[in-house]
Length: 330
Ligand code: TXA
Ligand code: MG
Image (cartoon, rainbow, N blue to C red; front, top):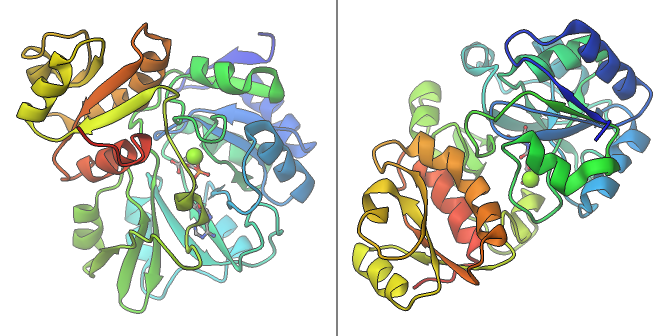
């Protein structure tokens, strides 16, 4: 593909960043790695450019996009500010995999899907940070997958999903976390977690010193529109098996691919995709979305996936698994 550029994630080539920034400034789209997953970016201040993102992904118009910034000044330009007394905490957390929903200002209807709020995050990755700085504008970027598919952890997955539908793909190697950022909003003295992600609920509670609630919303006007759509799913059938007994039982039926821990993979008698050790949930998270794509490419009609402890990043892992299985359990 001639719209793909390899880039060192630690010391990105300035000329390639400049080329990508020119594309952003003229209203084009650029896919890039972040510490969570790959994003598909456009100038957040240009509604027409943001529309291109929705078209390339096949994304629903009412699902707003996260706006990525490289510094706090940009946050002041597009929001009515961070909640009182939180700036110091955000200065410690950012850049990092946390997104906060704030009251918006000077930003169009397209990236925010007509809401009066905007979701903001400062990614901990040099490629997007330098791209935002060089472009001089905040960059709106959802995950760089076809709508409904698992988020991409590798540039190759972006190429498979979006290929020539985007102007440029920056290949900076695999994303570190493999699950998306945690999305929060402040409500009175509390934090509402709209989407569990790479930043853990335990850390949120500890760092902000307030109560953290998971919205877990299933009805009413969605506060985080994206959570209502089918997401992260492989095309093949996938079922969740929460206990060792259920895993062994489901795998015994044969003709299934097991997806789970190295500990469990040793016990089942079917072919397996090993996500990592149960003791290293970060490794499990990193291998999760790619495993859904591997299942689709495998000869097996169906996958059985192990449940993990909902602790730390495990909460995000289980949230994605439950969505990917549409709630189907063995
Ligand atoms: O890690 C990430 O967050 C990645 C990378 C590329 O930064 N981005 C990402 O974007 O996951 P996306 O579009 O796939 O997910 C954004 C989520 C959706 O659930 C969306 O509904 C929610 O954030 N969101 C965006 N703006 C919002 C707003 N104003 N109010 C409530 N939820 C919002
Ligand atoms: Mg997404």
